[in-house]
Image (cartoon, rainbow, N blue to C red; front, side, top):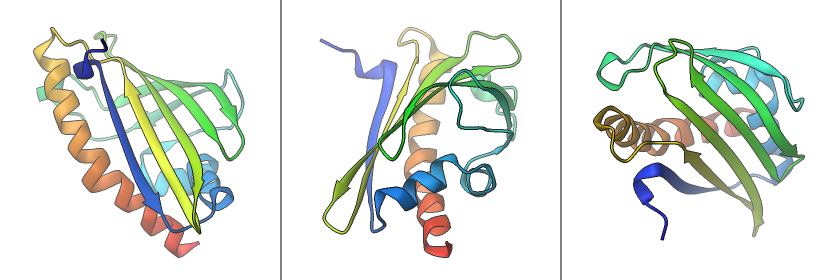
Length: 146
């Protein structure tokens, strides 16, 4: 049995076709509108940096070093995120796209939370709210503006 405290598993319906959602997830100028500033490039092994507001209460320094682990165009994007401060915060984030009616069901799997670490569990709780209330609506807004 999987301990749900080790990951977040969310999904959202977006009334846009997969090719358009894929663009929002992989084109750097669009990604910076809904996530963080970065130097992302869709290339397996590519390392990039994302910067955001530091969150000391969760142990996040505000700088994540990331790497593209795998992708399948218009279907899957998996990246790793590691806090640059070397504090043990390291995650895998996967986006999966599935056509649904006239739109796309976008699935998010955010893995790597330590169920025994209070900081990780606090980060998990905050990130779950952030993905649901901040990031998914921001992706939708980018898509609507494309």
